[in-house]
Image (cartoon, rainbow, N blue to C red; front, side, top):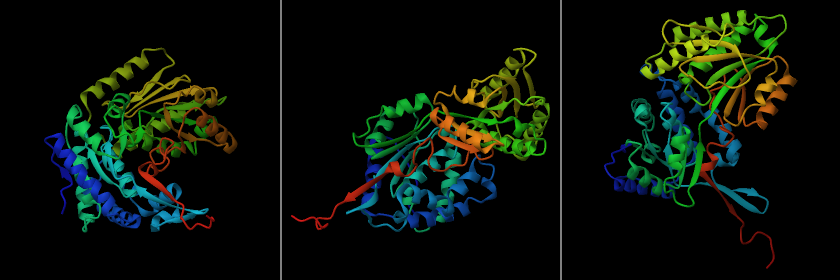
Length: 422
């Protein structure tokens, strides 16, 4: 069985591994249905007791399912892609081909991201070389061991190399960039800028998923309906808990549209109950000391502002609800800290979005109003508008872009005997 981990002591090691992977992409093509078959077995293998506490693993398993990926591939590349071969497009024929070797630079805040990223390249028939952040190393090894179990014929494992080297190792970073035909880059502003400055080949394709944040919003009728709001609160709590609020799709704030004659007290009580239930079901495994300090400071700063600012939180830094008002998106605290802000009009909030908001989670009772909000959000840079409880559902497009298509070349062939006379 091929070794998934690539031991690299020098830039030359990376160059050698990359050349082997590139050759495989072009000389040993793999059918899309074969990839889907292995992914389905991989998903089953991930249903293991020892892995269930990994943040985001449930979504990883759902992502690998055929019923998730087949519609995605059909939308991005056409239904003919699943069977391979050329398909008619007027007098010409079209066929997707892999770009070759795709390098992956995932962010370190989401442990499953290195795996999620490489699956996008594999779906396009590419090979992958991944720089795994040290914060994700243990989880990635566990997940990839399950791929080795599922991929008995090595269809995919021989197309993947995981590398572990410090992000400040300039020589390694540059060698990896020079060797690839495409790159998938994830992370904050500093990390993305640093990777984009690497010496990629002039024709290398880059898919960049940079720093974003997300918020939720509810209209007055949704949050004031005591029969429905407990359900909305449970859905919102699940969105907050997934990835410990570190994902770009994590809600950092909830905007509540005021409703005359209704106090938010009942809603906050239901939200507090939902947070407590979610915390019992999914207790925090660990917390960085710096995050503990940030959460405590956020609580204190909020309560010191004025009497209208209220807060509810656990004795430990497990979760925090900050209640106030305002139309601006607050600076994220993360660590399961949700700012709940009362506003007069949700459209006023959306009008202030500046392109940094990735996902808007909604709970609305008026379909026409929701459509108005969705259109306004689209014009103000939001890429995903979903209902609460589905803010982390990983699907294409993501950040307003396809996930598989960027690492695929769509080749056009106009046959020499296409009917035109000489």
